[in-house]
Image (cartoon, rainbow, N blue to C red):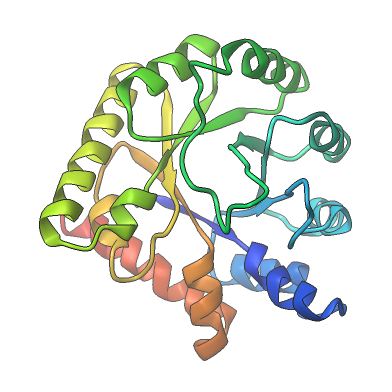
Length: 243
């Protein structure tokens, strides 16, 4: 089945709402690991709206699965990443006014800057993933830059209102995943996935890992972090067993 990386950003959204020291994102990460996830994802934003620098350092020291650090390609965050040395860096677009990430990187437009950062992290033996829309030209550009993997943005699929629109967006993801496989680049996916919509994406064989956060944290409010993660893992198991 596809591996599950749990994004714990929104555990800290609750904490930062009151500027207190709870809930603890590291405790949440350890619970997610105990429930069977294969990685922890965090997005260290420029405005530090949720995850803080200290959270990233503590996670680096305490979790035992993969630490995937999402980040914009900006100098201050790059320096934190160089110091932390996560197991993977995922470069994402970032806009201060956005509520959440609104789409994939424009790899074509940012080729020169992205290429330099990719090479820098790879020289440190840190693999780099690029968060892209399911668009053939962006995927080809990611391959040309030598990225280790891509993460397909599933936001448009997740937000589709009608069945027709959802099927059209799923078709784009399937075609993008197939192209990625043909171009021999590792493929991940994520954004907006939940128990109601994850199975069709998880059923795509060439998608090896899913990054899921908000829906798991929201579900954890009701059933606890371990149960929320176990429910999602069960859904991924069902997706692959149905193929």
